[in-house]
Amino acid sequence: MLAAVAGVHQVVIASAPTNDDFLHVVLARQILAGDLPVRDFADLGVWLTYACSVVSQLVFGHRLLAEAVVNGVMLAVSTYLVFRLVRELTHSTPAAALSAVLLIVAGPRGYSYPKIIVYAVAATLWWSYVRQASLAKILAFGTWVAVAFYWRGDHGIYVAVSLVLAVLAADGISRTGVLRVCQAGGLAFALVVPFLAVAFANVGLSSTLGGATAAMNAQHTGTHMWPDWPFGHPGDVIRLDGAEEFAPVVSLRWTADSPPEARDALRARYRLTPVSHDGPLVSLVRLSDLTAPGIRRLVNEPIVEDTGGIDRGTATLPWSTWPAWQRWRYSHWWLRFRVFTGIDEQTRASNAVAAIFYALPLIVFIAAVPWMHRYLPAPVTGRRLAIFALVGLVTAFGMMRSPYDVRAVDNVVLPAILVGCCLTVLWRAGAAIGGAGRWLLVAATMVLALLVVKSVAVAGQFGDRVSYLVGDGRSLERMQGAWRDVVARLVSQPPLQYWEGRGTTVQLRLAQYASACVPASRRLLVMWAAPEIYYYADRLMAARHLFFDAGYESLPVEEHLTLEKIRRYAPPLVLATDGLDDFTGKMYPGVVDMIHREYETVGTIHEDGLGYLILLRRNEPVVRSYGEQHWPCMT
Image 1 (cartoon, rainbow, N blue to C red):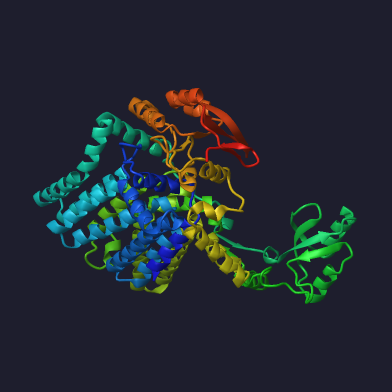
Image 2 (cartoon, helix red, strand yellow):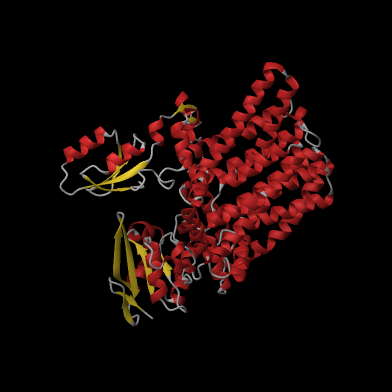
């Protein structure tokens, strides 16, 4: 059941993808069109990510549903594996359920699913080998090292380290242990040779290593810093809110001739708390007098032309205005207590998650041998648990990088397993001690569970997502509308169809333009990090890079191959930002010089302080104009 919930939740997340979610999806479409990684586009070794997307797109077509299915399946399998593993390690179903729940509420972004499945399987293989070491199991582990490498190279490194630690936990420093590491390592290396051979043959050894080094430097330079602990004073731990914070919010439309002084006097007379304004004549306010006579008097005030959120016939507040949970908290003071208020905001919660995920493996490493192992069943021993905690430390320092509000929850798998073990130990230790110590440890168990679950849930925006899916608790119709919108996003084919008649971003408007005006047989060139334009326009990229970023400028072969590919496909349109010369030109001068020579600016967009350029290839035949801006159209 938990696995199914995790899968559905991840599908919902995939219905509203972020910018980075399109990176591998677009490259998967390049593969479907005949392009190959390394040979035809710059690749960082995420071949298995492309492969999963390619297979799903073949089955489900060019729509968001294809990637959503991949994400959902991966999270469902991972949740099941974590549940099963924690139950085996602790013999506690509640602990296993809580560990699995952490994967659900974490809600990692779609493109991060390899960080979940890789380590859920790796942890399962780790304990399987430690329980009963065998050649077959270590070879399976070695195979998973190669699989992780194909999802991303650094995953292969971290899983390889965990394999060595598994052998150390099971076999110690021995001849058998060395032999097992060599057997698994040899198999893993043999399985990644095809990737290395393709990379070396197409761009050479130095460029392959240089590209990997540049990518790693960009990912890890200046991104590892200790997170800010969000609890600084007692109010961050527990707080009692006032009833007025849960009073209903309604709108008042003032008569056009009502003076500001009269409005202020009315607000004071009815003790209305201003919330915001929606134009010069509409105010949002919180009510204080919720009786029918009080509401009726307000509705009948001469300077109140109309109201919103009030049933004027009965002088009551409908559920859509004042949901049940807010009513209860308004009426009952004991429901207004809030705990761990310091992590009510996502950035603060994400910092708490990062701190917990860094500290937890270290605590387990220290406490495993002298204390924790006493309360866990075989095959868990203090030594094995301590070594497994080292795996958690390796992945924490490898995967968690700032900004933590984006990446902290990606490292949820191993901490979730360790949390399950810690909670079980605390609970059982309390039962063994008895007396006052028992209740102290029971309280510590509950506090730790609540702190971890809330931190991860807020960092993963789980509450906001659930609130949206239940229509903010306001009406069944609103909830049905939310689910219909999720389904519409997922199944719309082509995906751009969903956005017809809806307000859109600059990127989507440019995608609509490219879809309408660039022939399907021609390619497109986008010069900044906007892979969603390629995806929604359903046009292939004319360059080797989805976007031009720092690092590759030190590799002359990349600019040479990129220029060669752009000239080969001669894209009719180039989309760029006004930082083309200042940013991109300094790193890829040859590409930018070619654009200035062979293209001319035919349209601009200025929005939110940014400028966007539309450049047309010189002498490109134009058939008609597009939109109010009269942009050139080639179809």
